[in-house]
Length: 300
Image (tube, rainbow, N blue to C red; front, side, top):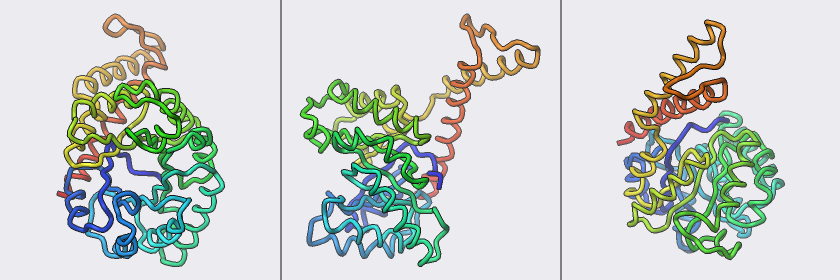
């Protein structure tokens, strides 16, 4: 299973069909239907049952289940597997063994309900010190793991667990944020993403944190409010100027290779295989962002 490239994902309460429909039309690249924090205890069964009858969507639909520490998670997983949705996001996950158990359960559900084998993905949401420590092992535990999600939201579980001071600049979470990114990349996960920015009215601070994540190597971020989606998409989409510059680097470098040289000067800077690789990755991100934007536009 390969996750469709996304810049943004938007949380929406699982018991509110009207908000799920609005989320699909918001311009986000993917929607996360939340069965955990956004749903009161007496609404959880109703929200879970609603997964069998979701609105049509041009963007992928994921589900955040209740946590492994509850007696609700497996019922949530069964509902996702029965409906054949894009994947499950597991909050507060800490161990590779649970990832392997999820893989097996989803395999059985796919067979039982006629879904393509391997089509339902797993997104571990890293929200504890132990989860940070075990990120690489969880990322390698199943081919269904298509995204590792760093959960460093203000007043969130990870911040509380580590006892750090949260700021948009990310100083207190820098090691954890970097380790989750490094472990994801080392495990071959192409879509490491960041979770939410809680102050949905402060779009300037959202941009600061999003730009930090992008500079570190994350490819996207989760929104909790539709107003955040445009900022997130903008930050994680290479600008037209960046694309033009890197296309020129690739064109000049490819010409040089044909002439027998693998090191040239472009605009006063040396270009070699490593620089060309970065340029190709920027172009690829731009193309993927364009594809994601087209998918989300179809949902409007």
